[in-house]
Structure formats: structure tokens, C-alpha cells
Length: 262
Image (cartoon, rainbow, N blue to C red; front, top):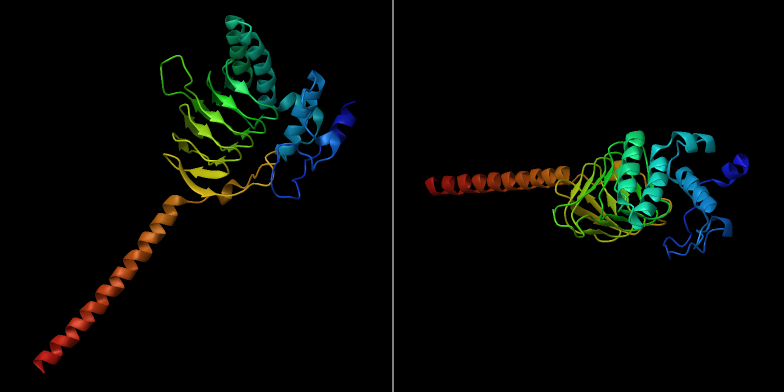
């Protein structure tokens, strides 16, 4: 059984069309997400997600036993089920146990989509009213936090296919659009459009471009724009241009003065 699951848990290819329709019609039938999966299908889907989004995954046994992000997602499903049925204390206590075991704190009231993967995961915090869409990838130290003491929607809504880098913080009831990418260490306090890249403190949109497939995210975090470096380079070029202009005016002024004395 494990051998069969491992054989089918191969990386999912991006669509040849270069865009995403949300139906995954370009994938083989066995790779397409089931609209109403059974419990066993959800487990298989979760394991396949790990193989798709983490090149370090080597075997199903390793994934089942050594991935705290996967354990946290499974524990949250149970605690969320309890929370929705009014069993708040058991739900909170279970989420507390999962936090102790994995280092990942997900409030049982939070809504987590399918194929969400938390890589490494230590220090991740997801608040009560947070909503995380399908195919989201987040790394250690990510915080989806609130900015209000009122009992209302106060945590962010994360769209489908979003990648959130290590130690990034998203605060308030804002929306992060589908397929957006949030750089490591960014502090996002304003809505993010779809297919955008956000870096810095506070977070700024530095690029908006398309994405091939949300189920296979772009992991090249080293290619994120360095906004500070770009601005410093622009200032340096501007200063050099101004100094050259000043030297030109000084030389012209000296020549004119010599003509007058001559």
C-alpha cells in the first residue's frame, strides 16, 4: 500500500497553457483534485502535496512520521470539527496539544483549505478568524495575526496558491490575492493583489506577474527584488549625474570668466 502511494506521489507538472483555470483539466485524471474527497483521499492528497512542494521528501514513511506541518494540519481538522459543533474547550485543548507537539499554533476557529503545506513550521501562528485558501505554502515563523480586540473578522484572508516566506507577518482583516508571493520577513498590513510579489517592512508590492500553476509554487525566493538596493542604486546614479552637471557648469563659468579678463 505504501509503495503504491509513494509511486503516485510524484511532483505535479505545471499546465502547458501557463495559466490556471482552477479545474486542473490539463492534469491526468488521477492527479486532479476530488470535489468531495473521502478521508483516505484527503490523506493521500496531503502526502502528495508534501512531495510536490518539498524536494527534500524522499519516502511516504518519512512524510507520515517526520513532517510537523502535516501533523498540525491533520490536528487542526479535528479541532476545527469540534469547534464548529460548539465544543470549544476540547477544540482549544486539542490545538494546544498540537502546538506542544509541532510548534505550530492554529486556532481551531481558523479555516484552512486543501493541499496547504507548512514547511518546517516552527513558530507559525494562525489566528481565529484567518482564512487560508487551497494550495497555500508557508514557511516557519509565519504569523497571520489580528489587529483588533473586537470579536469580529480581524485576521487575514489568504487566497489560493499563495507562498508566504519565513518569518513573514500578515496583520489585520486584509486579503492576499491568489498566487501572490510574500517575501521572508515582510510585514504586510495592506491588501495584496493577485499574482503580486510583496517585500519589505511595511510590505510593498514590487512586482505583479502571472503564475503557471498554484499547485506547484515558485520556490526561488532568492530572486525576490531588493527594493532598498534598487533605490540606493537609483540615488547613486542621480548623484553622479548631478555632480557631472555641476562640474560642467563650473568649467563653463571659468571659461567665460577668462574670456572677460582677456
